[in-house]
Image 1 (cartoon, rainbow, N blue to C red):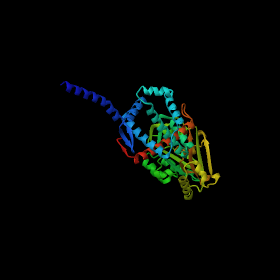
Image 2: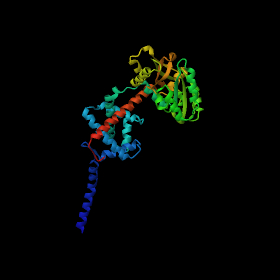
Image 3: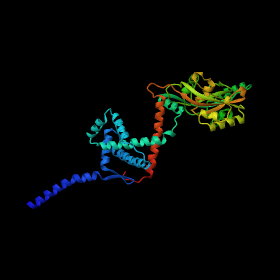
Image 4: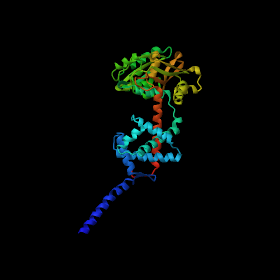
Length: 405
């Protein structure tokens, strides 16, 4: 029995000694394989601890697995193209990373070490992601163009308020060439009495001279603040189905019907300035003039394109004005347009010249605390670069062999 007891004691000691070794071997065994590159249990455990230190939300095991797989894919692609980060660049990246926590690199590493996170785990995390960022910038940054209109739009989105008013309108613009003004006014007065959207749409298809006539005059949701101040109250006073009194515009008479009104996110203030262009097309509302307006609309994406169509320079006028300095009829055209959009239907010279109006952009006052224009442009570039980076990773993942994720 004594011998048997000694044997059991020796066996227990052997198992106790083997346990940590087996556990350690298991910790360094592959848990995921990405194109024959292993992710070990130790790396997964370290990444989960790193995510905890960064106070990452969600299922940390899942987040860690996804990050490590994508980092393997990124590292393989960086090796393939021969793009790497030198020691100086890595040291600078690590120092910058630590500074986000208002710590020196030594303090940051010590703090992570107290939570069981090895320096090498931080180093690999930073190195792969910083090198990938630099690679994407080097590959795509020169292809990214951020226009003034895009910056203006981003600033407008910054300057939104939780509750603002948008209106859903339909429009009719009735031609009123010289000598036929009274006739146009009479038709407009009759239409202004309708309260049915179906009747208004039928009238738009029959008599309206603007492109929206094909859709029964229907316009998209538009911030009320786009319209001239005097007209805003008129629209607010309408009930759904109601129509404005005839609105005189150059060479025409306009009507607006309110289809609906809602609260939504809209620019917090009216624009400071509006950049727009007008193109004068000989022929008034003739088929040839309207066909030319349609061709112009199909050929241009922004106001700069207007000057590359071979039109006489004197026929194109581009200007930037404060909203209150814009003629009411032009303001009515611009209210319904987004940057790069056009409309036509007004005429000048007694009905002999068709006017095409294009919105180049709206400039909003920079709200307190908002970024400056260059900062906004840099933010937009970063968003584009992130989209390119995501697309590359998605392609790499689609063609990869991944086991264990």
